[in-house]
Length: 293
Image (cartoon, rainbow, N blue to C red; front, side, top):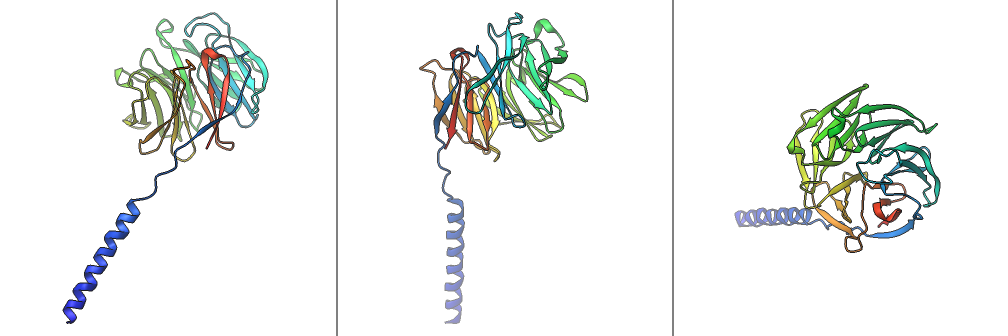
């Protein structure tokens, strides 16, 4: 009798353990994200390619190509836009060549300028220094990201290169077809770099120390901007008109599809404190801010 009771108790404990294990693994899936329009700028911007939030100044920097994306015409400029969507200074600094990606470290704004990286003092709006690509005639510098220690990374999306500026040393840090036309970049701390590969529509993670690359998610067409939600997940834009939310495990959700309306979604920004996702619309000449819910 005692043996029978003991067996029943052991069986009950085993079943209980299985139930608890299944219950733990069957966690409810996070609610799908939703976007609602918060504001739009007017259309005085000129082919806005990227937007960057300056927390210290409580302002958005916007890079305007104002012409062809590889033209050395000096017509590109940087605008300042308030967090209410009002343009504060349309041509805060000008004379650039098709400016695209931007990165900010202290009071220095790093901007790509077709074949070079331009360093602008945010207090004066004046360019202080430039760094040329290895071969200016074969360069298409695109996005910029800055790590917490001030290391700057720059993508060359036509010629499969990633440049690095560290301790004033400017060099090709990675190159080769395995990069699959890198565009969007995002430094995560000092040891990880996120890359958007436009050729494969993939979001990939690179170990800065070993240069080992891992694909997080793919199927996102012409990946452009990458920003983090601050919780290990990412918002990724496809230049053609899609926005995605990519969880750290690789699951992705399409948040927006404006391809039919021919509204591009270029290099985005996310302001975590306000849950605002800011989208440059390229040929539509405006920014659109979405509340993330």
